[in-house]
Image 1 (cartoon, rainbow, N blue to C red):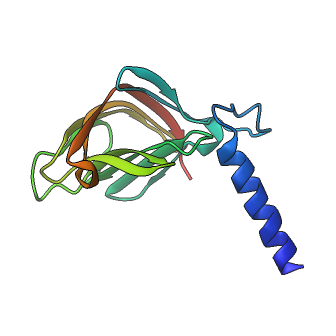
Image 2: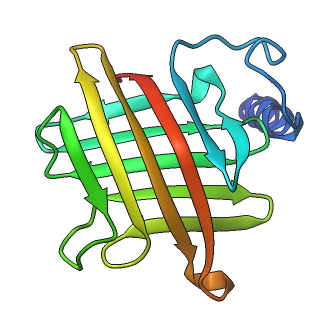
Length: 159
């Protein structure tokens, strides 16, 4: 029985990530969050069901992904609510923004002293965190290739 459950879970996850460009509705999912941007000038939108945020006393983590496994993650350390946060400006700044893919496995990131990014938190309520972002990420594993992510915006339900 345990093997059957694992097989069903694996089948669902495989179907979820193999339905290229499928929407929440196509996959029978529901969700309330939004996360979108332009990646190298091309519109990118996450599934609503994958958008979420975790906010603690001094850390905010926001993320979303598409049905084909692309994702954007934002991590803000020393989080203090509504305001502007930067990434890629100092070795002591571990806040980050990343864009990645699972096929092939690759990630472009702005953190510490590489890449550059800006996150503007415009609203932080008991249930939702919203804002905008943009960044140029670097993929150190691919010869320091860069990827520009612009016009980012999110409204993520808190977990």
